[in-house]
Image (cartoon, rainbow, N blue to C red; front, top):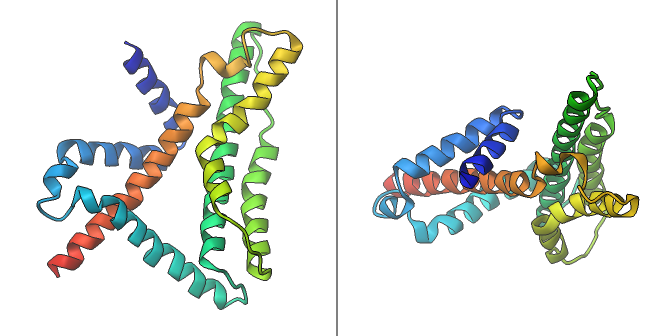
Amino acid sequence: MGFQSDYEEIVSAFGKVGLLNKLFIGISFFLTVSSVTSLSEGIFKWKGFILDAINMYQYYIVVPLKTATAQIGLSYQDYEIHSAIILSTVIVLGMRLLMLGQQVAYDKINEEHGSKVKPNLLFFRVVAISFPLLLWLSYGITDLVFDIWPHIVLALIYPIVLVGPKEIMCRLSGSNDGYLEKSSFSYFKVYYSYLLAVFLLVGVLGAINAGLTKIA
């Protein structure tokens, strides 16, 4: 019963984003009907799945980005591209989750008070667009040197960053129930489901590409 409830919660949240929902369901179905271990005998190889994903990312994302941006006067080191992709993805997903959380919270408010109030999501949309643009621009016109590992750690624990301030404010206000959407929306489950869907998509595409290359 608990698993069914969790699954329905994730699917319900994904249903609001359309394309990603379809990709996630499609990849899940594909991996279900044809296990990676059996595909290892043919095109896909489980032991090389992660390597295929990395190769796909490097040769079809990083290299083309460096080439394309060089044409407009922007210069990136590989670690800058890795950082920009990680931080942009984290912020965009974070803003999307905050928007979904706000919608759930306002739905509860409207249900309790019989109102039809809608949340103002403009701030989240502005941040989701402006932050990646400014980040890529700053990396492209400067020659920064930094360690990428803190960015990776941030990506892995980012739901804590999203939920932490909400929990702290609730504690300070004396509320033991937590923030409004807590009982109906899990930032952790949806965030990690997004990351899993993205990784599976890149990995499957990388495995297909590797398999077709070998066949050719």
